Image (cartoon, rainbow, N blue to C red):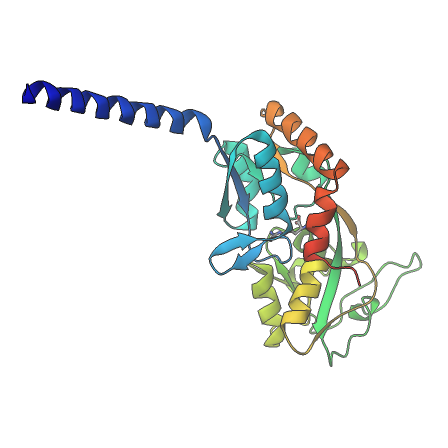
Length: 266
Ligand code: ARG
């Protein structure tokens, strides 16, 4: 009798185990998001948690899709490759939509705008963006970069791509650009006087200036950009689902609410 009871118990346990394993695999589909979490207010650490506009928007999308969001912090330059190869489902990183990137991945509808800003030391001798150049040609384009100008950027970002272009295209030439793993590292290089200026997206620029003493943002916009979520080319089903979710979250005010939480308008 005891034996039978024990057997029954074991059977019951086995059934339970299988049932729970099964439901785990089906119900909690993961949505893996790659980002580079040194980019406040879009993504940054609060303790050991990644928070910010992108984290919350992705969380809201995952909820709509009935999926569980997992955020992975990686180098900005490896996000697109990782999404392409299927290592991550989506890249959400204040990522600017560019024609070149569109050759590798698909982008969702845009959820925010960015502007490239120039941060300098408060006591910098450079008072405007034009000030970095030696002079201008008849068309108004820069002829050369002043001696000693070193521009810090986050590697593989649009700030990096534009800055490394020729002075004639309003870049600074590769030799005058120093790239860092994160925007925060580039800003630290500016604080310690290793670079003359940092070119980075405007909202992170504001956060970094607020978090460090002795920095300011030069007036003027370097470029205007759209941020969107990147998804593998072949994953059109997910692209559609995300665009639908984004449209709903825009319509019901969720996106505005998330942005306003991190970028309070005075
Ligand atoms: N908007 C810029 C770009 O797409 C910079 C983005 C950097 N993002 C980040 N999470 N570090 O190139």
